Amino acid sequence: MADSILILGGGFVGLFTALHLRQLQCSCPVILVDRSWSFVFKPLLYELLSSEVKLELICPTYDELLHNSGVTFVLGAVESIDLRQKQVQLNSGLQYSYRHLVMALGSTTGYLGTPGAEDHSFPFRAPDDVFALGQHLRNRLQLAAQTTAIAGANIAPSRPRA
Image 1 (cartoon, rainbow, N blue to C red):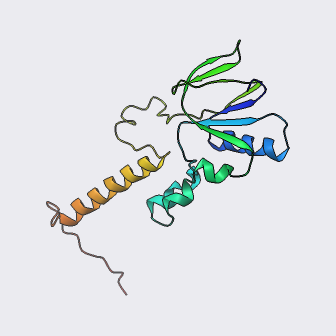
Image 2: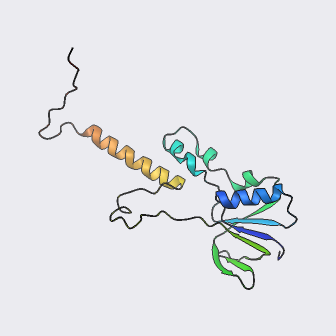
Image 3: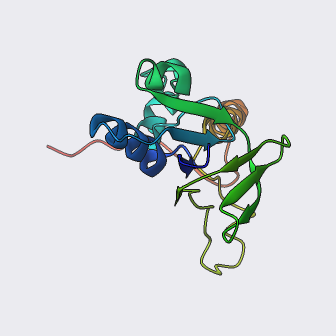
């Protein structure tokens, strides 16, 4: 569809651009491409870590979010973009022509050149990151619970004097 609006990336910018274009009753077909089946509502990832909400609430599928919207969802990762020919090649072999291209591909975790930051921290951008951090915390708590004494320390609760 050479007359389409092709949106690469289904994060906040890509998803809301697609929905807004449909709300404006844009006459061009709108195609949203993302490499995942699900949107990730990142502001609530901490609630997934604390088990306050279920995964389905934070990561709804694009099929759910785009149902009856008129936006076509395509699962795939961008292999190449030819700006002169106005074509995008996906890793699946599919190729899309477009009239307008929206690039909303997101970002990666940045460590700002801080030595050791990548080796000693957890990214917090996706459900897998949340589960890895949760497992790490459970392992540390279990290890702490198994520790019966701290060498050379006499730790007792202190009470204020009357």
